Every structure is written in structure tokens, then in C-alpha cells.
Length: 247
Image (spheres, rainbow, N blue to C red):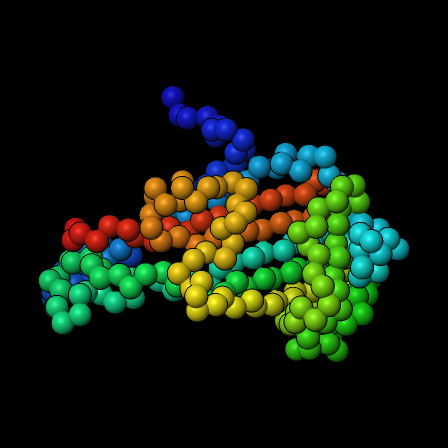
């Protein structure tokens, strides 16, 4: 019989294992060698915020600082990390065909990229309209559920949100809608370069659990508020090959 469900308080889990290959062609023959391995593990627990609901009303500045009718808001935070296996072999050593990447220089977390996608009805918020594309949005952003006090999508003034995309849809059979995409970047420090920036706090994972799978991993976290649903939290860990021995 197939397995059913997930363990503990994790309600959804998605595992992807992948292999990067090195190809060697000889005439019309081609041989594949495993170059390195990777894994991504995504977990969701829809009932984590079961006591919260919806999105703040357009005239409730404490829950919706944008002052427009919103249908959904998604915040994605993603660590920007180097591949720990950028160098193929020990310096000065030539690999044999089929050797995996045997020299590692460590995973460096350069920073975190935040993406904020805001969808709603009517005209986009002031400062996020078509004429603002390419500008920096510097006003404070506060988006909370209609019920509950989740503060994950709250940012102060001068957070340097870059207005990357403004999409407006008009239809004679429905309300005008918009989707705005904002991006910001927070750099790491030299002293912290070998440490994860989003590891604390993690909700779906623990550092010990990740370290048991690989020494090298990075974090992505996604939070979504919807007008007619509970908030959703999703976390994804990308694991990099921790095996230094040849195949």
C-alpha cells in the first residue's frame, strides 16, 4: 500500500531529488555521469494560522496601509546563495571522467531577495501605478489579516521596494483588477557570510534536521494572505550535495 499523510504537524510535503549530469560523447554514443546531487523539500501547514482570516479592509489603515481593496498578497523571501561546489576538483588536480565535484568552497549566503505581489480591485495603490514602474516605493507597508495580528507583511518607511511590474486587467463583465510586483534586496555581512539569514525562525524545519541531510542548504519562505481564506505559510529548503566521494 502507498504511504498516506505526513508526520507531526506538517500537512503537506513535497520532495524533489535531482542530479546534475556530465555528458561524454564518443562518436554517436553518449554516456551520462552524475556530477552532483541536490534536493528540495517544501512543507506547508494550512491550519498553522487557522485562527486568522482574510485581508484588512481598504479604510483600516492599521491592517491595510495601501488604502485599496485587496484580493491577495504574497510575500516571498529567498536566500541568494552560491553553489558550494563551484570549483570542480582540488586545486591543481585534473578529474577523471565521471568524477563528482570533489572540492567544496562552502556555501555563501549573499543576501535575501524579497518579492511582494499585491493583487486587488480598481486602481493600484499610490506610488505603485504604471507611471511608477522602475521607481522605489518608500512608504511604510502594513498588510494584516482582517482577523488576527500577523505582522510578517509589515515594513517600515524607506525599505527600498523596487516597482518591477504593474499589470492591469479591464473587462466589461467584471471589475478592473491589478497585480503589482515589488522587489527589495537585503545584503548579508562579511562576518555572517557562511550563515543562513532566514534560518531563525523556521516554522516547518529545524537547523538540526537540515544539517543531518546536508551541510549546505538555503531557505525560501512564502506567506500568502487572501480575501476569502486563511493565511498560508510555505517553507522550502534547497539542499546541496554533501557527498565528496566520486561516484
